[in-house]
Length: 331
Ligand code: GUN
Image 1 (cartoon, rainbow, N blue to C red):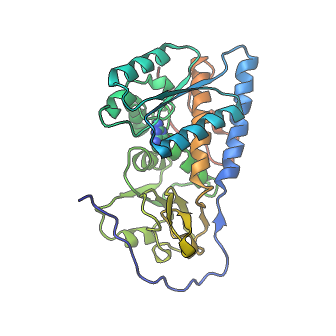
Image 2: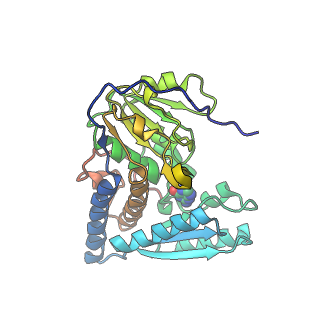
């Protein structure tokens, strides 16, 4: 049987702090990033370059993936990116998918390619994601981009971790020496965000389903990034006064009166003694899509020879520039 997160059912002690935690408004920060992305699209077109283009591939009919893909396509329109959607049946062969990606890799009007995961079981996801040209890999999942991130040498950074860093740095100017706990070690969130935090000079502890004493580890943290996919795992008494909390989880659970409600990995009502917390929804989610658009324009600028991909593009955001690498976006 798969391992499960151990739920802490202890009653939280009464809150001592009368004031409420600041809400980190992911929607507002995402809007600000979108404005910047839109301005860059306008600038690219005005200087005679191709309009940035993003191709999104969806294989099969996973309902959650359908929603994510629709939101990504709609978001492109908001900032002026041309999107193309490739919806393929779940009987699509791996070879057919690789052929499509090879065609998109060679198309100069396509600057970003995103293949939504999970893919059907008969398709080798690693092979497929690794076949996307690293310079068009706007998800940042290609081994070249993963390697660049882990060595702090630029490349394209995965969208959710990039968004998380913007949210954290909207409330903390300098992460040097801060104790950060990342809950969850996924390739999409936990591992890349840990690398970004290390680059920002934080002391990072990555925990997972087999970690002993998670509550005690969290109680030491200045920042907690909860990406476990376990609803309300982090309880109020796991959080020290003044901590900053980033909630990546989003799960629909049974509420009162037979209604359902969305919750994150953090028991939101119990953490008002924190300094700041992201809401669910409206925290990390909007940032992921805004960062996808931004990565696409970054890739288009690099293709046009306008950007080294070293993050100077983020200077105007209400957060610190978190691209510390000096390398360029790879081809
Ligand atoms: N499935 C869930 N999240 C993501 C994502 O960020 N990118 C892709 N390609 N697939 C996903």
